[in-house]
Amino acid sequence: MDITIRQEKEADYQAVEEVIKRAFSDVEISDKTEHHLVKRLRGSEAFIPELSLVAVHEATGELVGQILFTKAKVGDTETLALAPITVLPEFQNRGIGGNLVNKGLELAKELGYASAFVLGHPGYYQKFGFKKASLWGIKAPWVVPDEAFMALELHGKSLDGVSGTVQYADAF
Ligand SMILES: CC(C)(COP(=O)(O)OP(=O)(O)OC[C@H]1O[C@@H](n2cnc3c(N)ncnc32)[C@H](O)[C@@H]1OP(=O)(O)O)[C@@H](O)C(=O)NCCC(=O)NCCS
Image: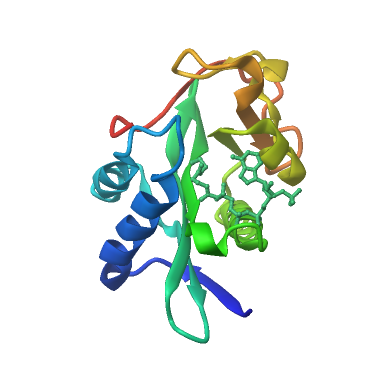
């Protein structure tokens, strides 16, 4: 199955929100409003169009996944927050999520971002090099399990000497 990963366009917005709704419909810890979050983020200063990506099934043109990185801060340092990432249930476990993360991180590096944070399942994000943020003394802006809040350095030891609480966009 061939999948293309490209930047989200305005014409994709509705399909992206549908993917997010469907992907979270069976997720217990979800509040089922993640598609509204994406709408708010698109309209905020934290939005980075180049880092809002979609996965498209080449044969049918169907939009099957999405990933979004938005601007965040830790202390005075600019960083990225990965959220949300979703793949349609019937397309999961085929590597599409992994491709979205890898492509997003590659583009983030090219754009000069030095680090990224994610709140999620440790087993999933460790594969991409994420480690628990508490190793740097960095905290999530919410009460979450220590191992679920993770950081990745995109350039050298970019988080050395950085500490504090990550400030996500107000839209969160
Ligand atoms: C998380 C998600 C995007 C992964 O997409 P995907 O295309 O299935 O991912 P991949 O095929 O690249 O990777 C699948 C692997 O991740 C694992 N995985 C998937 N969801 C997981 C989860 N919530 N926790 C731990 N591992 C998970 C699978 O077991 C599989 O492991 P394996 O490679 O060792 O077999 C997708 O499952 C999804 O949309 N989930 C619902 C929405 C969600 O929870 N998003 C994350 C929070 S924003």
